[in-house]
Image 1 (cartoon, helix red, strand yellow):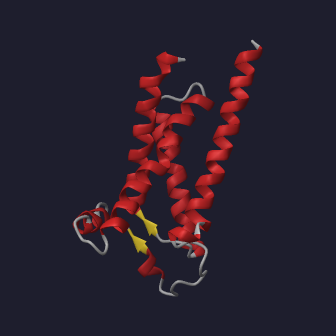
Image 2: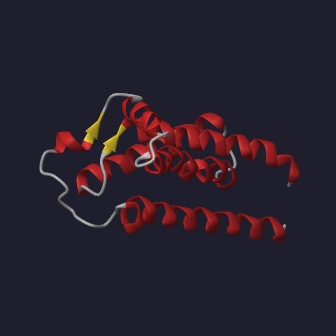
Length: 151
């Protein structure tokens, strides 16, 4: 019984550490172009993409480019990888969470992050980021399902 409690505490601790890292990377990591200026532009429309797959297509077209290829890969893979722990940790921490709850919670968190980025101008609102983040959470959940029998 004590071992289960210790594991539960460790999982919650891991979840909060992950959320802290996520917040840092999304809003404050200067190496990712964050934290520099609160006023990137006064035209809010320049900081919004509401067309699904618009930016994903644009970044995919840059993948072979020597100048922008690494930036495109960082954006595409980074958004997916950043939310993989979410898909893994939600069902660990919230024991009754299944696939649908995990995907919905991850999507909501991603939406909130995008709204905060738009409001603070520390990034932009991009529906494609929500799509990529949700894909990452789905991959994380699949890893949880694959690794669950190993516990």
